[in-house]
Length: 271
Image (cartoon, rainbow, N blue to C red; front, side, top):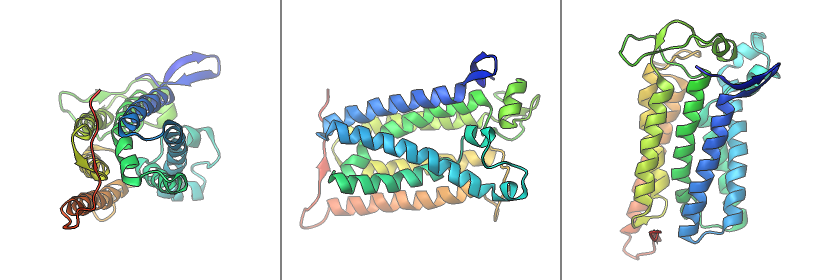
């Protein structure tokens, strides 16, 4: 595909990084728009988005190193290298660390926790959708060989050099599968958050929908770490986040029907 958007001598602007940045800005725009609707302060929400983005990058790299620990320990991969810096990392690791940072920041700033989580989820899904297009451009996170009519074949040597994607072999476009799934999740969440809902359920729906989508897509994706008890590391994490998402939906909806009525039902005025 096109791993290098602009190349001048030894300098190049990676397509992946550019699309991730665009996804971040689009996600920030949506989050601030929803925060304004919900009456949340703009500056703390903006700061929270930035902190979560940084935590997400760090967490994704840490989980990537953890998953490939044997490669780094044996010296097959260098920990402090350009390849490690450019690698996309493990999304779930980034999400988990970003969630921890978000909880700590929300408590420090005395923001309403569930409402803050809700306004973040649609923008998060949108940013993911655009970011996966970056994965497709770079060639990372590629799928297993296939002969389906929509298979993609990478032929750019630069993609192989940067990510190791095999050239000349038809592969499942798993990056596009996830980009499409994330886009659908964004549309569903953005529509749903505009309706009356119990605060916290948007996060529950995001965790549930994304976990199901990621679990299914992993069956068509190449796994450098291999399978463990028949599933990839990412699928096991997806099962855990699915349980968390479903539990959150049940708990928040049960609170809505609590006999004392102590529940916050978030409504978002249309603009």
